[in-house]
Image 1: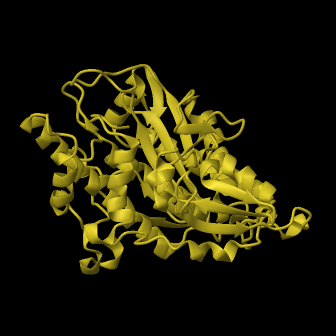
Image 2 (image 1 turned 90 degrees about the vertical axis):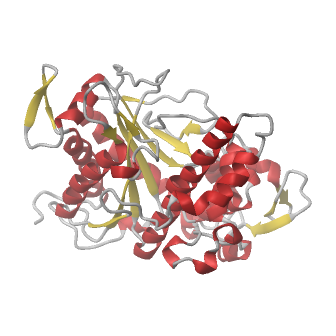
Length: 431
């Protein structure tokens, strides 16, 4: 949840992301250490040729329902009688990017990768006590926190109480989640350390790009507004783009079976002073729901198809379903509802799961589940945050609660443990 909201379009954000994701010149990649280079310095469609003749047109169209629910991607494609499809840069269909050849419709389904066992189901040695044995699970504690919380717009203070920094909350939660997953047999890898960015970039490294973007469309605006835009853009490039790219590089080296992104939410308020509300909701995002203007980016188009062929959606939905059902049972919170918002769509009958094109889900390798927990400015949640992390239960606003961070973490871990016990057909008699 963003606590201050400058006006910006999706096209603007796409161009900003392209600074690190696409344009090598903009970030002087030759001078950068590998972990801070763009995750993708250029788009090579031919690298997807390994997926030629690997899935039927029916399966292809079915998967596109997750990635482009409104069907905007079809404006960029032409299907041919030889059971292939051409992808173009724009709807004018003049610049061909790539051509995909499908498996024949009557191909034995057992050869279709969409029906093959996914990696998370194939490990041996698991037991009832350690159902996650053999799995490497990535944990991404959302945001940075610490001294960076205000810059990354994940900070608020209510009255005389201690400030709330989302990055600090996700770090505490991540530690408890890691412990629970490790006890259940998993290996855990992190995208960052406590209170420190994963990237070595800092806002000052983006002064030039920020000056350019701040100047766009500000000819008739005041110097004060120009300065605000300049400062916001340089900070955005640091904490939202460079930071996520650096985390993606860390995960690319570790290659986890799937990654859990931990976040907290907040209800928006009007005015400068934060407010508390009675609002308790949970949501989990899987990757998808590319907007039409996002598909104008060659990089995002490439990443859509890369994720589609990597078969991440079934795994993401499966894990998200297991985690949210346990969170619902433990945390007793209602599902978030985005209604007819074009950027998010339901994917099944679980009301807690929505598809959304989030930069972390898109750049992180493999399946990525983005869990957004309790609203930080809900009355009960806020005072549970103020109580800090503790063992057992404490009385807060007349009701006994466990530590919010442990409850969040244990619910996520509990959902995974139950899921893999069932998936791996484990029995309580196993050691």
